[in-house]
Length: 285
Image 1 (cartoon, rainbow, N blue to C red):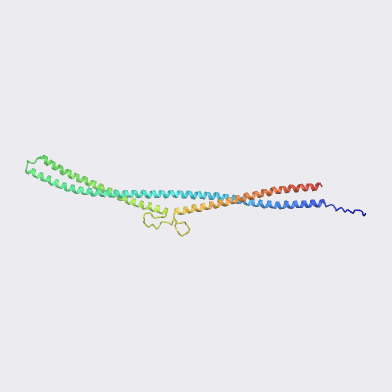
Image 2: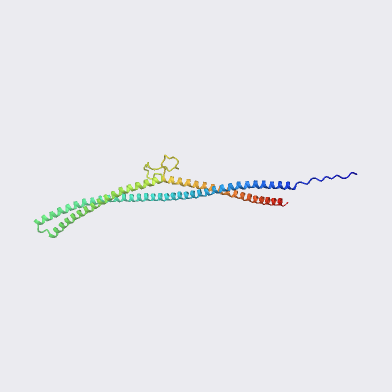
C-alpha cells in the first residue's frame, strides 16, 4: 500500500488580499466623493439661482402691487369723471330750465308793462279831463280830482317800477346765458374727459381724440389710459406668476439635490470610516 500523497495548497497572500480590499474601498470613496462634489455643485448653483429668483419674485410682486394700485386709482378717477359729467349735465339742464323760466317772466313783465302803460295813459287822460272840467265846473269835487291825480301818479310809478323789474330780469337773463355757456363748456369738457378715460362715446358726438380701448399691441395706435393700465396689470401679474412658478420649481430641485447630497455625504463618511479602519487593520497585521 502506497503512502497517501496530500498536497497542501499554498496559503493565499494576506497582504495582497488586504491591499485589494483597500483599493476597492479607496475607489468607492473616490466615486462617492465625486458624487458628493457633483451634488454640492448642483446645490450651490441652485442656491444661487433660488436667491436670484427670490429677488426677482419680490420685484415682480412689487410691480404687480403697483400696477394694481394704479389700476384701482384710475378706476376711482373714472368714477369721479363720471360723477363730474353727471353733475355738470344736471347743472346745465337746471340752468337751461332757469333761463327758460326767466324768458317766460320777461315776457309776462313785458305784457304787464304794456298794460300798465296803456292804463296809465288812460288814467292820465282821465285826470287831465277831470282837471279841465273842474276849471269850468266847480261842482266837480276836489276829492275826485285828487283821486284821479293820485291814480295817474301811481300808474306812472307802477310803470317805472315794472321797468326796473324788467331790467333786473334782463340782467338775470344775461347772467343766465353766461352761466349756460360756461356750463355747456364744462359739460363738454367733462364728457370728453370721461370718454377719453373709457374710450367710448357717451353723448353721440364724434370725438377723434378718443384712444382705442383694445389691448395695446400696435405702437402706432393711441390707447386709453384704462386699457394701458389694465394691460400693465396683466403683464405684471403674468410676470409674477412666472417668477413664482420658477422659484417654486427651483426650491423643489434644491430640496431634492440637498437630500441627495446629504445621502451621498453620509455614504462618503461611512466609506471613509471603513477605509480608515481597514488601513488601521492593515498596519496592525
